[in-house]
Length: 402
Ligand SMILES: NC(=O)NCCC[C@H](N)C(=O)O
Image (cartoon, rainbow, N blue to C red; front, side, top):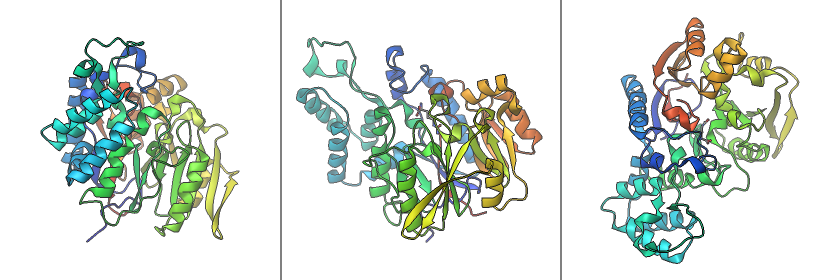
């Protein structure tokens, strides 16, 4: 039986992927609370769902098995003990103000007729108006939620990351996304498809943050991990130690420092691999890019700052004769700024030289085609309001070897 997880590249033909179809959590977004929930606008849910359905259709037309995170999380609650533990953990992390609210919400969740409705409700959040125990209660603030929604969950790239045959259950940078990692933790601990034979490479309770958008599997030996607003170098060192010890064949991690700006929140918003020797890159990060190499050194690791350009590093470590860095929007600084903001660099590679992109990034998409890349375009005007693209909205479970 092959292992449940197999991700040893960014470009191997994609066979199985995890996504989340946006739900009512997007209708629990409010203008005054967008920053804290990491959104720039409020998507129109019905259209966001239509766009997401088109994303799924493109993947399924290529024979890719599309798994929904909400289904996997539902199926992971395989008995009442696990379900109760899930509810306890979810409530303990939900920052609920009073015991009365906690007790009433527990009852509300336990009364839901199916585990799927339970999972959906935990993602959606709970408005105070839903709780009879709060009827007539005067609050110091007018914040309408007893439990926040999790609107970022459709960016399944980030809360957990498959690497080789294992998975990194991540500690997320911001509180609002830290709660999301409960689903991956239960899926990879209890789901029948994944509970055996999946090494857990990080943990949601670790001290420093790392997010999946920063993690690229460049080859069977080399990972690239962004040092970013979301991922600390300390986390990369910790993950590297575990990966080197897990004997999966990886022997080098490139720590790529992309700075702490929110618009470049993850490495995959400015750099992705789209073919054996082709990469997308956002021109704004190319100048004086700092890259660290992490390798095993005796029974610990060594971290050295590279002097070579990213292009030369990729050529030497990936053993490529010719590396093509394709700049977002052809490198035009105005078009690139606009199209990177709308995730023009955040391509999902479904086979070598074949990608899924948002249709709105017309300049970048044209350049990709001119470079011989097969481009599948999907609408994303509503989805992109969460500041993520096709790579952000997907977590590969199985890629064929290349
Ligand atoms: N890999 C990615 O770039 N994911 C995009 C995450 C967007 C989300 N609103 C966030 O700020 O985390």
